[in-house]
Length: 81
Image (cartoon, rainbow, N blue to C red; front, side, top):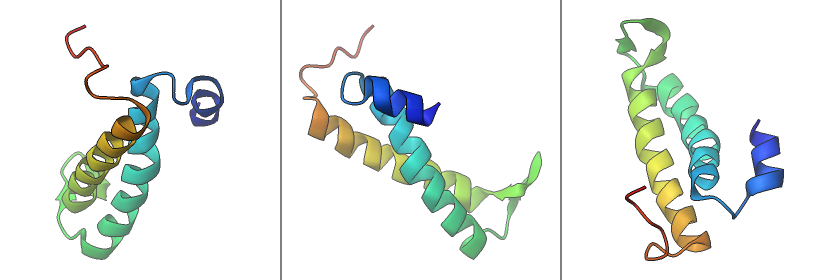
């Protein structure tokens, strides 16, 4: 699905840019941080840690903001629909 989104919709839809950023950047850092510092596990999934999940959200969000700013202008995006 990521390859299909990359081929068909790259730079056309901010939703695709954000989803690819979360999967590529966020998921990569979650694995690294979770294995290194993930002592406290999430109660409903013992294979995942709080540190990995939080780092995925933060790093994925920052990468998403960077790519959306690079490919789109924030003033061009309509945030209300």
